[in-house]
Length: 391
Image (cartoon, rainbow, N blue to C red; front, side, top):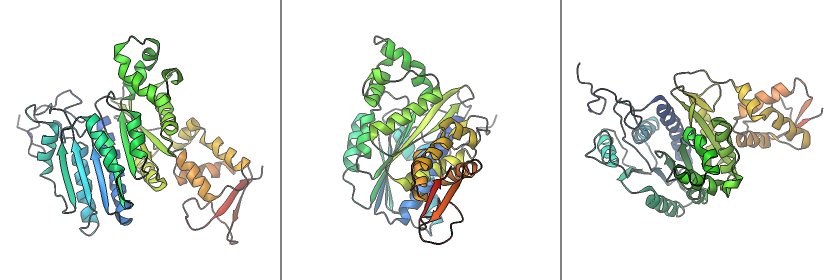
């Protein structure tokens, strides 16, 4: 059998059945979502004339895996390169930090961060981009990132990608500190299948040593283990955690994307946190690029997801919209757009809900500028209309 080399000149050999040395479907979905969002993020901030952007990948991994799959650091650099050429060879000032404190499992004689540095040399990087590679323990580095983020100027922004192997090092308080400046966005990846499997046991059996990290994480997030609800399913646990993050962090915009591993009903979740309405809307758009039918999950080996109306039923979104416009006489198109985003739906989905509601209720649209109103104007930042339910 001929030796296989990937795009970076590495001998692929025979793929190993190890998720730390191969990029499985669920991991590919994760980096695809990250890539989609990062591309949008760079475009938005570039057009806003940001002076500097900080990009932190705190568990950067191997960079390129045995099966040729590209990890988050390679994807990030390729996004920056593509942005440069798509924008007339122009790119904002970006400071990139790739960090991982572990040794490589593919090349054990190297650190993962060193391996990423070598692989990155094969990718064009604009002069306005600085790339640093570190191998600092997460608990030490996160404090430095928080400190630096809180010193950012008005025209600076930061995106922090946290993709640990597990969750024992993650502290919800660190995420709260990162978001306190309103200039930082955070993407967090968690192994829900493991967390949800042991949460009930960890609550009941305080001597269970395997539950120490989980008790610490959930205890901090919920303000006490006694407040953690009983977990009925992995998907419900994802939603419960999302809502509790919103309460704990005190931010308006928190979202999650579910990823199934190998069609075995074991789920991961990507959580996204931001204070920016525009940033949140763009993340939702990135999600819908991955899952065009539902915008909320990826199932390995299966491109068919629940249609949007079923997702609306799960979230009871139709009833939430109806209650909003029935109980408030002055709901505007901007209010509805913001309400939709807070419930993890794009304006086009809110429009679909309103269209369905009109089949059974009398909905009236009144333009505040005196001109005829022919639609809901959910994506229009200039026109302002009132939308109310008369029955």
